[in-house]
Length: 182
Ligand code: AP5
Image (cartoon, rainbow, N blue to C red; front, side, top):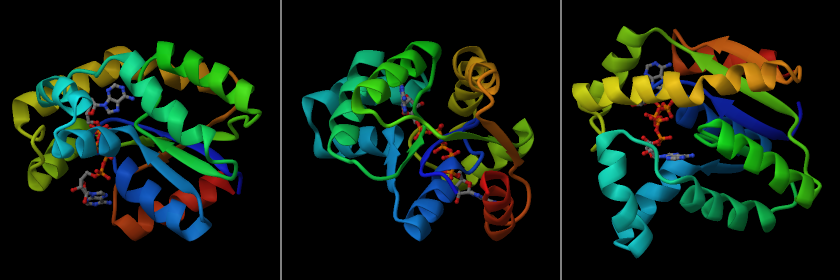
């Protein structure tokens, strides 16, 4: 399996759950921009204060802010990594290309996790994070379709995209992912 990976998919598709599991079993750095932003919010930093209201509305935090977070982490990490929730739009994808060229760490594969909207909403309502109420979830889905889904073609055209359906148990999805990335 290749060691520089990116997970894409709508909110609730299981990116965080599966990324954490795969990163642990393969010794990869798991970089979730959502988790990093939530840690800033919890710590009450200036960055967290700027991000909190945006996240609670289900909008995307500014590209500059997210890029600064990712750059700092990847720069110090020479071995494998798994990006989860980043890039989120074409501007971020192009910035990632530039950064990876600079670091001489080319991306190997992109995994798209797919699930139908009703199941996504059900899973997120059961989780109950600050941004997991029905209105905000539906807005996050719209933001995903408008801003993040264009990345599917972007990576598919490069021959880097693999797809899995996220129905079934966590173990079943994990197995599908290992097969897709083998
Ligand atoms: P982020 O944290 O990235 O959230 P998201 O993309 O909306 O993804 P989720 O965490 O909701 O879903 P997931 O696919 O990771 O699923 P999970 O494994 O958690 O972003 C949050 C916000 O931060 C954004 O709205 C934005 O404001 C900001 N942000 C983050 N990155 C940004 C960026 N790059 N640029 C700008 N802004 C950014 O699973 C969901 C639930 O389902 C869990 O409860 C889980 O236990 C459960 N579950 C998982 N798998 C299964 C299964 N197989 N069966 C049943 N339940 C399951």
